[in-house]
Image (cartoon, one colour):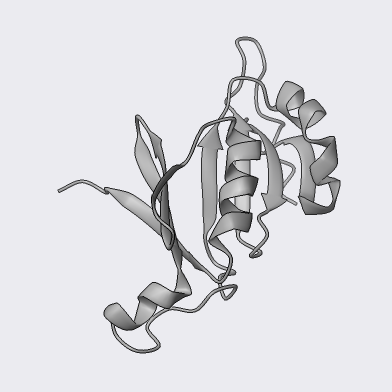
Length: 134
């Protein structure tokens, strides 16, 4: 078994497509007016209209309800990427910050409020901050 995709249900497919294309620099495949896919070598982020939900079962998913999942994107240089996203300043939750485990992360919220973590693993010679117990 392998994880094939993560799907976001939204009331505004166009807004999410625009956001994820802007943040990732990748083209998103518009499979259907109600469905799009951001395909990467490691997985797919699917974006589906809430108009598709009844086909799965009435009320099984709702847009803008997630507060428990982060979408993680490994990027080459989070600082450089941050410098190109000045037009998304309102979406920034946390500017590039070295996390206790060593990754440098930039946290954003997409237009539906989903948490997006753009991270760069520790560079050679950079270590995680010491654990202060806090």
